[in-house]
Image 1 (cartoon, rainbow, N blue to C red):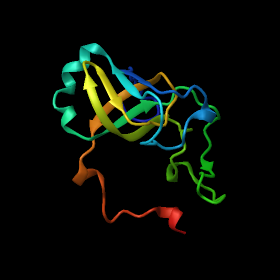
Image 2: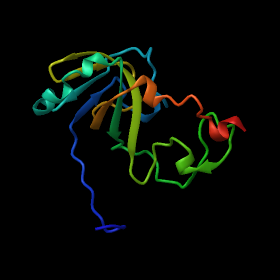
Image 3: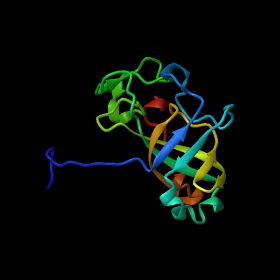
Length: 151
């Protein structure tokens, strides 16, 4: 089945824990030097899937933004944009039709099903959708630009 009638369902595979309890206290980007406890509690039945993940210095964390503070808008004025208006998909606004977030963080250690990480830009108890390793050569594109931020 294709189109708007397709139903997609995700179930959390764990939860992300941070010291942030309000939208106002949550940074807009991950802060590798943020103070406080930042960790992921992966569902224990998935622990075996962490095998060899500890060989990576960084991971990509995909999560569900389950507490929107404003409705979706197809035009936004991103911070750092000097008031410029851009389309939603030309931004990293958390207010999206499918509110899926992505952050790259340092993996500090793994203890059982708990992953200790550097500062991440989410509220405490944010549902975790997936974890992927960050590959140095694949995930940085030397010829990438900064789009409208260069205007």
